[in-house]
Length: 140
Image (cartoon, rainbow, N blue to C red):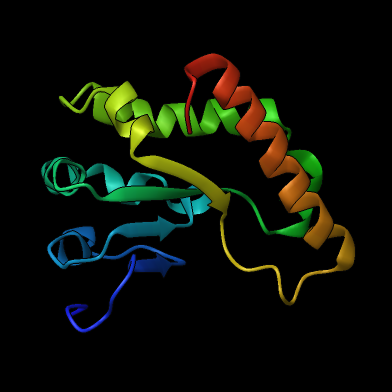
């Protein structure tokens, strides 16, 4: 599907999908709304293991873009939420540390139609979360 595209190839999905279909392509990065749909990836453990083994990466869209959630969440609450989502795979044979090495964090979706406050808050929260994760895990 992506064979004619040079460079890194990424796909973002704002909802649930059959993740194995995407992981079976030559896509390098899968980005999804982890904040709302973390469980959607959980049933694809074997496909995720193979995707990671071939060098793929997961962009965990853990920072909400919903304005109410952005006001309520903290870096600490999002860290707990992300660790819970990632820990599922650790219990299924994909070590947390290995998954973390193939991970990055992002906002859940785009911010183009959000208020200025939300568009500023999301990257601030993302930076705070990144610092927390790096202190604890050395990566992500």
